[in-house]
Length: 252
Image (cartoon, rainbow, N blue to C red; front, side, top):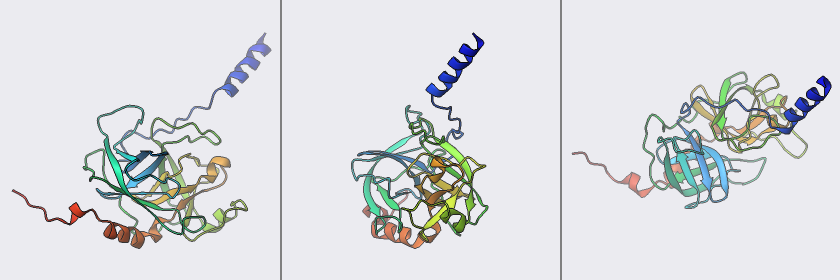
């Protein structure tokens, strides 16, 4: 009888997905954006009142995708959200690996900064091996478990040197100078979000490119190395500036 109960218990464990307990403390990532609609559901980072940075894989669609700011649990209205339509989508070219994975998204109207909605600074320096960084997104943090997450998830990962990262790449992926890697086997090293946001020392340092740590926890995941793209990001914001932002403001 005891053996039967044990077998039944083991069967139940295998029948249900493992518990994912890496939810962020609510609203501690006020720059995190949930992009949804138009065939996408992914993350981005708010860098000013008009602009969001995300990965190439996210691929929002102008006037079909909505950016939800100030969100934590995407299944309920918490009273903190701002839902703003996407107006422009500018992808860095060439549009394929191993060259670049970066997309700029302009909102149709500016975000209002609140305790729940704030931008994250662009990097003032590149991350160094050993730096501790936080990655956040709406996805499972358990390897080979792909269920979408209701609540924003957070993991902490170390930056890994380039050679260590390159040595873990499968044959069909090539190294690019636009990549930075983070995570190792003895850390929480998986977040299934095609554009999870990586922040190091309070600065935006990456958006997820390849979630290698979700297939093998010993392997680092790959992020776009945003410190190399400051000029491109600022150039896009200048070229695609909304007309309203160029008008003089008056106060009474």
